[in-house]
Image (tube, rainbow, N blue to C red; front, side):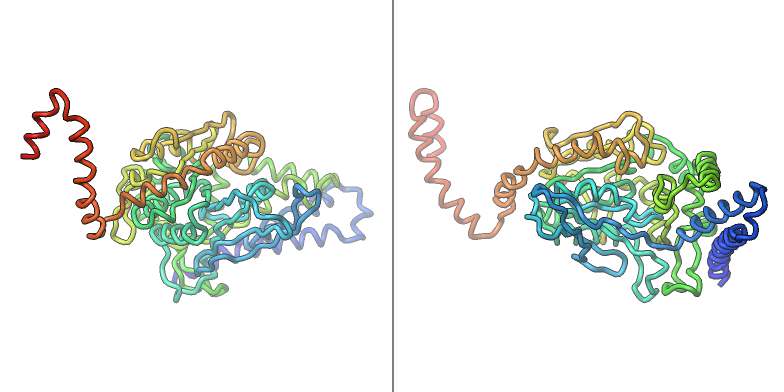
Amino acid sequence: MRYMATYDLMETMRNTNQWLGASAKAFASYPGLALSPNPMVQWVAAWGEVTERSFARMVAKPDWGIHSIPSDDGRDHIVSVEPVVERPFGDLIRFHVQGRPEKKRKVMLVAPMSGHYATLLRSTVASLLPDAEVYITDWHNARDIPVSAGKFDIEDYTLYLVDFMRELGPDTNVIAVCQPAPLALAATAYLAAEDPKAQPRTLTLIGGPIDPDAAATDVTDFGRRITMGQLEETAIQRVGFKYKGVGRMVYPGLLQLASFMSMNGERHSKAFQDQILRVTKGEAADHDPHNRFYDEYLAVMDMTAEFYLSTVERIFKGGEIARNAFVVNGKKVDISAITSVAVKTVEGSKDDISAPGQCVAALDLLTGLPDSKKASHLEQGAGHYGIFAGKSWRNNIRPLVLDFIDANAEQPKKAAPEKAKSNVTPIKAELAREKKAPAKTKPKTTAKSQGKSKPRNTGKSA
């Protein structure tokens, strides 16, 4: 019960700060105070405006805000968001461009479940829509999911990805961003063993912790320092009485946001101070760069406790993906089973979340994949956000990813018949081979009945 009280206490603090901001803004904006020449009045109004907006965003799910895109025919086409697969903990949705012929490229974006909504990839989606049919995983806020829906850990997450890949078919190009990179790799390996025909065409892993020990960051250091008991005691709470998921054990988004902000505290503090000054001077706007970024960054969601804890224990502490020892539903997932899916990794040289070396480690695990189907890219000067949504993504990484998709467009179709033959094991097929074997060996024997090969053949036939 004390955890529910803690959850409600955090929500109360957030609500109080939002109210204080709104009150300060309303009070300082009173027309009568305009007669005072004191600039402090304008500063209080600006502080209230920035504070109210910031704390209100923390409980709001952002809208995709992608209404239309230009097309090759010179017209703008309306974009509608349509569910393809609906599940309790997350959906697969499609951005349908109305009135446009279907694009050859089919891309499935795997959004991170790390405290933010899938809308964190809004600019990524918008940049891909003109050139591809885009689908994305839309994870739900755990606080809104009733306890009756059951658990959701990293194995369930992986099986969700498996089902989504099966739904879209083998001509899909999967792009996993940050947290889901190791689980997207595991889901592909799972399909390679269980349902090879459903494997995606390509898999691009962007800034993900495939091997967290390959390069230390604050995230990996934290995972090493704290024990699972300490983590469960300090980070896990029960959803309070305000939401549908009341009683569900979660890792609150507000705690995750606090940890994100603390990693770059000085930079965030300066950003808000500068924004207050801009509002004071009348230089700010509703959709200026600060508001565009923080409207998304501050909108956080809760994760189920079992997902958060199993991620820390099995991905970061146990390194199950890095050791190729990941298990789903009691079955070991062998990453070397991937033999036909082209895989590319992307890293940023200044990534302080998944440092260079963590993601490219995936290529060493793909022992069954030819080198011709492996690729990697290190973007110089790019941070974590920049490699999937910033200038580095738009100018350099996106074209490389699309080229990688196009370069491997036809490979799975050629490889499929060979796999189908190697997997055929019915008794009739074995009998057919035995019947055909004599017919094949006779011509070889007669053809080589000259010289030294003659005594060997007659010896075998005897």
